[in-house]
Structure formats: C-alpha cells, structure tokens
Image 1 (cartoon, helix red, strand yellow):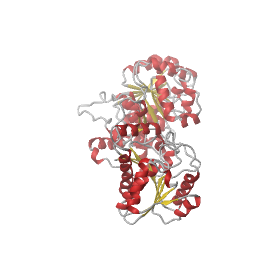
Image 2: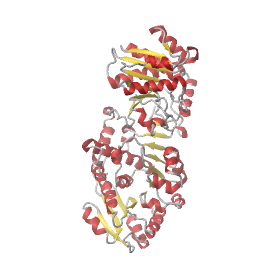
Image 3: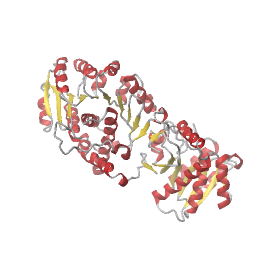
Image 4: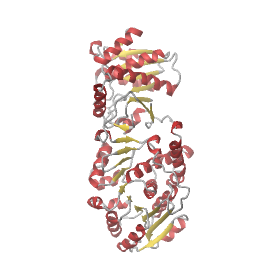
Length: 541
C-alpha cells in the first residue's frame, strides 16, 4: 500500500473490504505475524538462539503475536508465549493461530493474574513482543493488560529490545495520545498503512523505528476522505524534484519577490531571500522600506534589495502598494511578511496584498497576523496562497488555543485549508501541510535543533522558490517542508543539533535537493535508516 495515514476505523474498513473480496482474516493474520519476524531479522540480524518473550492479548493483536512466535521459532529464535487472558477468550482467527502454534510448539503459558505476568518476565530476554491490544484499543489498559504494559516497561529499562506489534499498547491509533503508562518500543511493525498515532506526538516518541508490512490489503477508493492524509517520505516526494533544463537561464528557473523588512528584522528578509536562491530560484528581489534596503544590500550580495515607501518607524507604508504590485507582476512567486513588523500601516498593506496579488504567494510571519479576522479575503485571491503559521500564529488566526490546535493538528489543518481556500502549512512537530480539497501530508524530516529563530523564514523562501519553479501550491508546500527538514537533518548530522542557526539550514538546501534527486533517479537504491527513539522512522515492505 501507499504511505497514507489512517485512523483505527479507516484501518478496520480496509480489513473488512479485503476479507469481503476473498482474503480470509486468518491469511491476513498469518502475513502480519510473519512480517513481524521478518522485520526483526532485517533490523537486528539473525535471531538464532535469541530469547523472545511474546506477551499476547486475546484479540487479533494477540493472534498476530501467535503467528510471529511461530515464525521466530522457525528462524531459530527461542520464543516463549504468554497469554494474558483465559484461553477460552481467544476466538476466531486468533484462536486458529493459537491452536496451530500449540500444535507445533506445545501449550502456551497463561497468566491468570498480575503475579503470573511478573513471573513470566523476570529478565534475561533479548526481545519482548507487545501483542497485547493493537490499533483498536482505546483508553487506559486495564487489569492484565496494565500488568503486561508494566512488565514491558521494566524489561525496556533492563535493556531488552521491545517490539510493538501494530501499535505500542497505551498509544492511541487515532491521535497519538498516550495512557498514563504506555509501552515504549524500539521498533513498531505495523500492517498495511501507518496510523496517525505512529507519527503524532507523544505517541511518535513511543513507537521507536516504524516499519510497515504489506499484508495485501485492498487499495482505498480514490478520493475517499479517510485516506487522503499522507506520511511524507523520500520515495513519495522525490518525484516532485524537477530536473533543470540544460538551456535554463536565471529568468527561466524562477523569479521570487520577498516583501517585508523593518528595523531589527532585516535578517528575516535576508534568510527568506537566501533560501529562495539556495532552492534554485534564478532571480530574487527584496522589496523593503527605504533605509532598510542599504542594510540588506550589504547582507545579500546575490539578491537585489529594492526600496519602497516607508512609515516614520521605517516599516513598509501604505504607499508601497503600487510598487509591490509592480514588482510582483514581474515575479513568478511572492513571499509576503518576512520581518514585516506589526506597524498598523504595514499590516494594512500586507492584508491588501494577501488578497490582491495575482501571483502565487507565501503568506508568512507578520503578514499572517495581518489576516487575523480577515481570512475571508483568501478565498477571493486571484492566485494560490500558501499560509505558513506556527501554533501561536494559527491561534491568532482561528481563535483556537494552541493546546487544542496541537491535539487536533491534522484535523484543524485540513479544516482551515478548506475554509480559507488556501494551502496551509501548520508548522511544528510534525508539520502538517493541507490542501483545500482535503489532502494532507504529515512531514517526516526535521529535528529539535531546528527550533531556532529564522528557521521559518528559510522555509518561506524554500516554498517561494518551488512555487516560482512551477510546482502547484500543495506540492510546493509539502516538498518545501520536507526539503527544509532534510536540510536541518543534514546540518544536525554535520555539526550536531545544539546551536544550529537558520543560516545552516539555508546552506544545506542544495545538498537536500541533491539527495532527493538521487532518490528520484535511483529509487531502487533508496537507503532506509533507523530512526532515533525520539521519532518514527519509516520503512515500507
């Protein structure tokens, strides 16, 4: 399957549809459990002689665990299965696989109480499999399930590698929220498609590395809104990186105009302009208040600084409207708001330009503040708009608290992209890019070192350059977010995450684009790398 993200109900629908079309649930379970064993061997090497504790619930997740134990045994591992339920509670496909396991390996252990669970997991295990609840679980694990979670946490603390089957117990598949005590996995092996809970925090921090196993589920119907959220990966986005025509010249690869600037905020304009150049724009201009242009001319030698009418505070004045329109008419894309300031005239100017410019426009920083209470103008804009708010700016635009926005990051991004008729890039961990038609992409690149002033200005410049190169607004935004994060990852790998500056991101944009172009040109060589505990890596099989 693709890298679309799903919630628990959407996953159940795919399961049902697949079974209705002739693939039995028992077969799907066999493929899932086999995939767990294969994923472990791929990641950790031969399993011969290694001790594996498999804690199973009574439902389908436990059934996957029974199958995984059989396949681990076939690979020479020494699995010990403990059922955290009465044997008569195991029904259907899971029951069939329990009986098959017992026919091959003898009767499994049954934990009747918390003491039995504790006795089954004293230590000395190389791996522990969490096959307790899975995707459909909600709320706090209770009774034996809670005891199983506690034992898996203890084993983790003792150095046992924990592998979650489908989803760590205690993590919500729908939104990544976690129970008071949840399993913290080194590796999560999920089936068919990743779930929202794998990639949204805090659940993402509990999933460890994420591997997706294809178990033969049917593809969702095109346009079904339940399957319109994508998890961005190298393979998915590499095809958006365009090859440059050998006859290219500076005017043919994209002209970007950055509008903004004010005393003390010139760096924002410089970073956006520099990022646009580093992303491939051939000609970048900066329209800034008179008096500020001299500063930017000294800061930026590859980009052109243009003076526009200024207020007494040396921010852009209302009278800059006509020069802005004139310069925008000669550009392929505009970045509006970098270092703008919140002077009333400057905000009024930005509000007018956001609704009136007939060029694809990235609306960022203080230009977003200018739109608070005036987002209706976006739907009337004569060209595509890409909004790039962080949670504070999004809160000002919507009146929704930052906490509520964080809790419903994907849903809110999709809702307001549709209401505003604009592409919305809701920045954060992870950044969500949403299109007005319901599509959304959850970004997979980036690291905490990017929490630094100016990183958002770099992103605005990246998206502006991609718009100027001819990508549609949704593709420019989601590719821009991915490349921006990848540049941050390259910077962190080279110099460490602490002390990264926005300029470090800008300087690594060409390398990030080169890496994606390499993946585009040689997809078979798409190297997959394990993720640190703090994030979810993505491998699809």
